[in-house]
Length: 451
Image 1 (cartoon, rainbow, N blue to C red):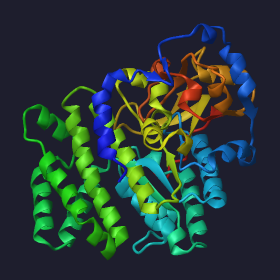
Image 2: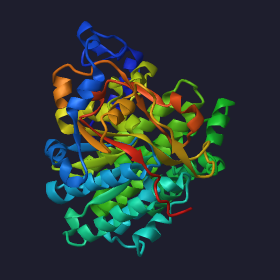
Image 3: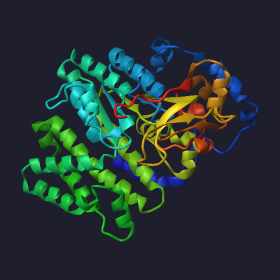
Image 4: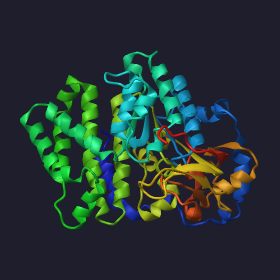
C-alpha cells in the first residue's frame, strides 16, 4: 500500500494549518484578482457542447492520467450520471481504464462487479443486480442510468480476456451490515484458530449495533467500550497473511479484506461522531482514499481508474472553504499522494430543474425542484451565457492566475430542502478545484428502479 496510514495521520496533525492552496489563502483577494470580471472570464472559457463527441478536448487532457475523478452537484440528477457514463465509456474503450469506483457501498456494488465480469454467482441481469441494493438512498445507484452503464460494461467485458475485464466497485463506509457479515464469514472460512478468534471478537462487540450503527456512536458517547481493538486486529491478521491468501484466491482475499476494512473504518467513522469534532467526515474520506489506493494496487502498475463521487469529494478541498473546517477529500488526497500530473477532476453543475432527494436522512424519496441558482454564483453566471450545456477547460485560467476569487458553487446532497437552497453553496476557487467543468442549464431527476 502507498503509505495511506502515514498520510492519514500526517494530515490529521497538520489540521487547520493547511489554509492555503497554491500559495494563496482562500480568504485573501489579490489586487489583480479584484480587477477580474468572473462572468467574462467564464464566458471566454465556455464551449457549447451537445454530445460525447464534443468532449474530445477534455478526453485528450484526461486520457493519460492515473485517476480521472467525475463529480456531481447532486446525487439525484440524471444528466450528471449520463455524462459521466459517456466519459467513462470513452476512457475505458479508447484509453484502457481498468475500473470504476463509486461513492457507494462496497457490498452492494460488488454485486455489480460480479455481474459486469460474469463471475460465479452473478445476477442474471443488470436490473436484477441493482435490485439487490436495499439501503437508503436506493435511487443513488439503483437507477436506469446506472443500469445502462452496467449493461454496456457487461457487453464490453464479454469481449475481453479475464485479466482485462473492467471492474465496478464501491468506496464508501456505509453498508456496514453487509460488510460485517461478509468479513466474519471470510474470517471463519480461513479455518485457523487466529481467524476464528478474530471473527468471534468482532461478533461479540459489534453485533448489538448492526441494525443501526448510529447506536454505536451514541453508546460510545455515553461511555461504552469501543470496538476498535477487534476491528483493528482482524485487519492486522489479514494483512499478515496477505501473501498466502492472495496466492490461494486473489479475488476472494481482495474482497474479504475490503469487507474487513469497511468494518474497521466504519467503526472509526461512527466512533468519531462521538467526538463532535468533525473527524467523522475525514474518517470516511480516508476510507475512500484507501479503497481507491487498494484498487490501484490490485490492478497493477499500469492501472487507470475512474472515480464517481460528489463534487465535494472529487474537487480539491484546498480550493474551497472546506479547508477552513479542517476537512479533506479524495481529490486532495490523491493529488498529494500521486501529484497533480496523475489526477484529473471534472466538476458538474446545473442552474435549475428537478432532483431526487429526501427531506431528511432516511425519508421517502421525493422529486424536488432545483430552484434557479443564486445570483452571483458559478451556476448563475454560466446560465447567463445562454447555452444549454457547456464545457470549461480550466488549465489556462489556473496558469494565467484567473478566477482566483472564490465563487459560490452549489452542492445538493441526498437530503435537500428547496426552501433553504440558498445555503447550499460552497465558496470555490474554480480552476484550483477542478481541471474541467460541465454545466447543464436545466436538469431532470434520475429514473429510479425502486419507486
